[in-house]
Image (cartoon, rainbow, N blue to C red):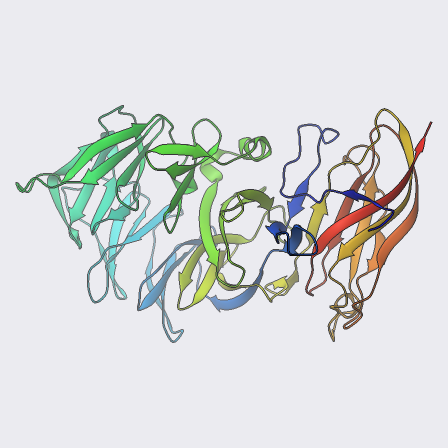
Length: 473
C-alpha cells in the first residue's frame, strides 16, 4: 500500500494486563503463515463452521460430555444418555448413567469389535456393541476414570492406586494388578496411555510407566521417569494423535515432550485460565483435514482458548450470543471431524466451507495492536484494509449478498471502542472493491486501536491494514 504505514495484524490472542500495553485478540479466527510467495506473509482466516450432522437423546445436566469411535459405532454420552450411532446413522440408546459426574471413556483392542469402558460417578461399565455391563468385580475399588494402553484398561482408584484390566478383557480385574506412583508419589488424578508409555497424572507430578512384563504374571508396568509438574484436573487432559496436553498445577498449559512437560501457554492464556475453577475446564482436540490445521482447546462456561498445533499460536472461540464456544468434545470418524454441543445432544461436522455454527453466524473478530506515536498525538486520516473481496452470495440474507466488515477504533488502548463503520466487502464477483475509511480525528499518546468484525456467512480473510496519519507537534 504505497503512501500508507503498514500495521501488524495480530498473529494470536495475546492481550497484555491493562489493554493499554497490548490488545491483540483473534476470536473465531486464526493466523496462517502463507509464506513469502503470498501477497502477505500472514493471513487471518475464519474458524471452520459447524454443520449439524446428528442429534442424540439427552437427559440430565450438560450436553455432549464424551465421544469415542470404533469401526462399527460412534459412542456419544449426552447428559446421562449413552448412545451408539452405527455407520448408516441408526441410533441406539445403550444405557442411562445414574448421575451427572465427569465421564471418561476408553477402548481396547479386542477384535472384531473393541470393548468400550465408561467410568462415571465412581462406577465402571463395559460396552460390547450395544450391550452394557456394569463392572461388579470386588477386586476393583471405585474408579475415578479410565485410560488404556497395550489393551489394558487403566483405572485410577483410591489411595493412589492404578488398577489394570486383563489384556483386551475389561471385565477381568485381579486384586493384585495395581501399581502406585513411586518416584515422587502423590495423589493420582488420571492414568492415560501415551504413544509408548502410560502417563500417571498426579496433583504434583506426572510419572511414566512402561509395559515390561517379567514373565511371572505380576503387574507388568514399571516406573521409568517422573516430571515434577502435576495436573489441576483430569478433564483438562487432552490427547490428540501423538500429543498429550494438560492444565498443569503451576497454572500453565503443558504438552508432553519426551519425558518432560513443555509450556505452550502465554501469560494471556494463563490469566484466562486462572479466572475459572480448574474443575470446570475441559480439554479436547481435533484435526481439520481440509485446512491442514490441528487444534487443542480448553473451555469452560466463560471462555474457550484454542492452541494451533501447526503454528504454535493461540486464538479464542465464542459462539453467537454466548460467552464461550459451543464445542465440547471432538472425534474423527467415518471421514468426518465431529464436534459435540455443550448444551444438548447435537453433533456437528467441522467444515471449512461452512460459515455458520448450526445456522448461527460466526463473528470473526480481530483486535490489532495499538498504533501510537507516544508521547506525541496524531491525526488519523485514513484506514485501508486489505481483505478478500467480492465473495457475496445469492443470499437470502442481505448481510451475505452484500457483506461488510465493521471497523471501530479505540482511543483508550482497547478498553472501549467508538461507533462501528460499515465497509463493504463487495457483492459476488466485485473483486476490485477497495476497502477504506477516512477522517478518524485526533488521537493522543494512548494511540489508536483498530477492531475488525465480520459476521457474514461468506469466504473471508484479512491480509493487511494500512494507515495514513499526521503527527501533531
